[in-house]
Image 1 (cartoon, helix red, strand yellow):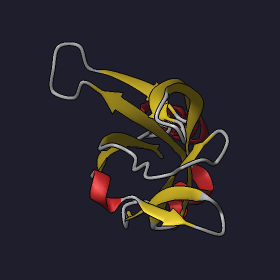
Image 2: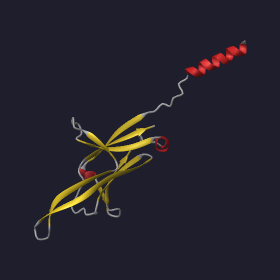
Image 3: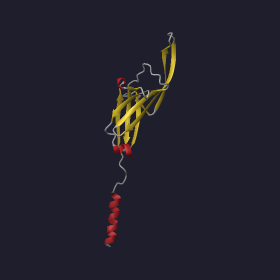
Image 4: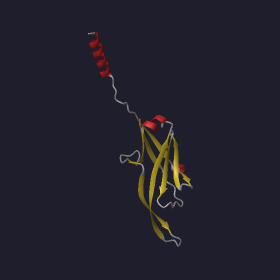
Length: 145
């Protein structure tokens, strides 16, 4: 009888425990102002480095990390695009004799991350930067752990 009672109590106590994993999600905005982009001559790209102490060893090894670029921030038309992102662009330049020339290129934005940091990288398709400087951008870092 006592064994049956102990077995029953074990089943009841085990059944009351919540064994489902507890997931947490953290979102951090990473804002890049035009003046904060740095050009790396060796890699031939722009980058911006962010210290993110919230991106811990545990999140790095066992969590999920993603980065989205947000457009139209603060408006009803705001939307996000997951990185990496490639956009097709054009500009009108002037040739050596002063004639307008349409210049078509791709802008590629990607990222890397590690324990305590995120780096956003930006390249132009043919690596022709001239006086190009990337615009202000807002990124949303999402960590699930």
